[in-house]
Picture (cartoon, rainbow, N blue to C red):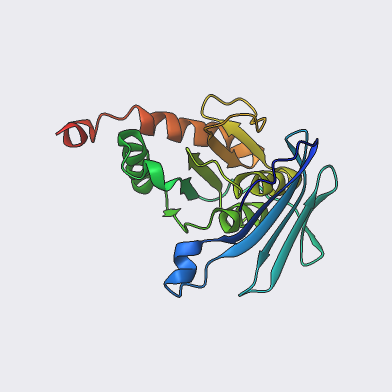
Length: 204
């Protein structure tokens, strides 16, 4: 990945291998992605999972497709406990708030999934396999294609205060989900960040 130094309203961002560490150890959880930005707004996204031969394509205002079949996020309101994807950058692996929030999610959800291949998790959410994604400080080429996939499949992407994600935040802290899950996931994140349960251990 690199920058050709040219200035344009149109920019391609490419991640040839999302899930590099997985690939390196033989774990078949990785993908390739690209996104076209117009004035920093994603307008076209493509994510390909070579192992499963799944091609996800999303055009702004035209929906999200998996292998040419339209996909639309469904409300999973009937589930008693949530299955939530967790995405974070390697730089904040041991950040105190990240640790607190991860542990809170793990204790209060059916399952917290960490694939270290963010684009695959975004596609899982768009397909309805996840109830939500909580992202903690994870910018990069894998972010915006996933955001477009989820939004065009009927989901929302917001910050921890409930504001819509515009794409301009350099250090994103985000929640993505079906609109009907907004309240419960905001509450989950707020409780996790302000939990005192692990504070003593983390401060020692």
